[in-house]
Length: 205
Image (cartoon, rainbow, N blue to C red):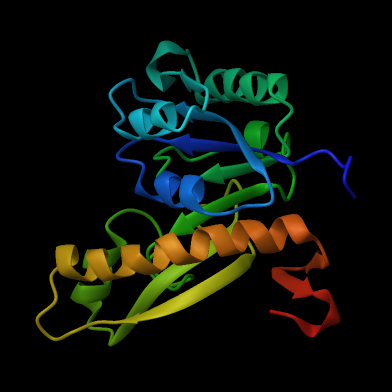
């Protein structure tokens, strides 16, 4: 509908913001209303400012607890009317305080084929384990580490001579493709969560 309001997205970052850039450059059926970083020096803040997107720095170290930090985050996002939150290299685990404020409306991206290799240094974990295939996963954010229902995945072969850096560079290409697509699919609706699974209505995946 012509007069239908455009969904508003928040993007949370901690660093360089390459996935933020992919979201900014994608033709999403939504508007990025705010970019929030927990680190003042995050390079991704400049990407947002150059795109004319409002930014805020909310340093986690300024709060007595993780929950207090997350309450400040929730307040900032609610002020903007955000309905979907994208974690684009946001290096903080989120508690129920945040996740309950945006139920089934948080997307996180991780550089492995979850449930394999959750947490930090996933690329090195894959190499150390000797797998032939790694990849990228976009999933719904939950308080459990990298454990939410999977929205989309893409496989990336692991070469015999790969390092964490070379494998990570190829995975990043897929991240930049997959994250905007996951946002589109979630915003389009036509899905539900059954247990751990996302079920796409009408048979789409």
